[in-house]
Length: 363
Image 1 (cartoon, rainbow, N blue to C red):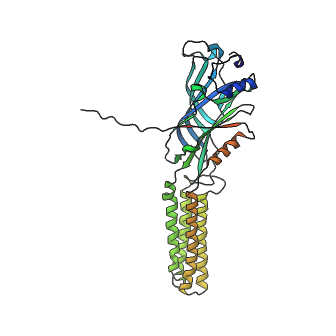
Image 2: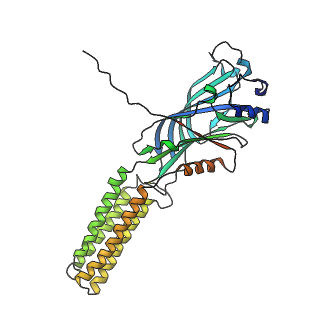
Image 3: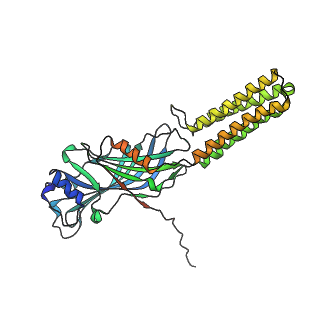
C-alpha cells in the first residue's frame, strides 16, 4: 500500500479531524471503525465472568491505488492490500467469518468481518440482584508500526455511527441511553471501547428469594403470641426451624447466586434475617427466666418487628430506585482508557428489532 499521506481524498470525503491527523503526524494511518452489535447471546456473571456476543466490525480507510476506479468493486485477493491489523483484545474465544473487502469510488476501502465471541468481563456484583452490568467490546491496533488512528466510519461523509440492535434476554434488560463508544488515540496502540449497559431483571428474585424470606420471617415473629412459661419449647422450636430453613434456602440457591469473595446485597438480606431470628431467640430465653407481663413482653417484640419492617421498607425502596447514570457510564469508560485526556465519546445508533408478522394467506 502506498503511503497514506501522499493521497489527498476528494473534497468533503473525510471529516476535518482526519485531515488534521495527516498534518500533525505525516505517517499516521487514519481508519474509520464501525461496530454493529446485532446479538447478545448470554451474560454469565457467575464463575466464568463472560458474555457472548455477535457483532460486525467495519473498517474504512483511503488507498491511493484505487482512487481512480470507475465503480465500486470487490477485492477478492486480500494479499494484494495491506489491511489494518486490529484485534478484539478482551475476547476469550472468537470466531471470524463472512470477510469482505470492497474498493469504492474515490479510493475508499471498506473491510468487513463478522465475529462471534466469548468476551471476558469483570462484573461488579456488590449490588446483586439490583445491579447494572456494563459490557465492553475493546478493539486495539495490534501493530504499532502501522500508526493507526481510530475515528468513526468514513462512509456517508463520516455520518455512519456504531449501531446496536435490540437484544432481549430472559434475565437482563437493555438500557438504551447509556450505550456509548469511546475512541482513545493517545496510547501507543490506539483503542476503541464499545460499552453496552444491561440491568438485571428482578422479578425472578422478588418471587423466588425475597417473598419466601419475608413470609418465613413474618411467621417467626408470631412466637410473640406464645407465653414462654407455657410454650417455651414451642417458641424455641419455631426459631430453630426458621434458622435452619433460611440456611438451607441459601444453600439451595447456590447455583443462581454469584460466587464472589465479598457480600452482595442479597447476602446482607439473608444475614439480616438470620440476625433478627437470633435476637428473637435471645429475647425468648430472657423472658423465660425474667417474668414479664404479657403486654410488656409484646411491646418488646413489636419494637423488634418494627425495626425489621422499617429495614425492609428502606432496603427495597432505595434499591428499586437505584439508577446507573450517564456520569457513571462515562467514568467507567475513562477508567478503561487510563490516564489520558485524549478520548472522544460517541453515541450509538439504536435499532429496534421489529417482531415478525405472519402473513395470512387467502384461500
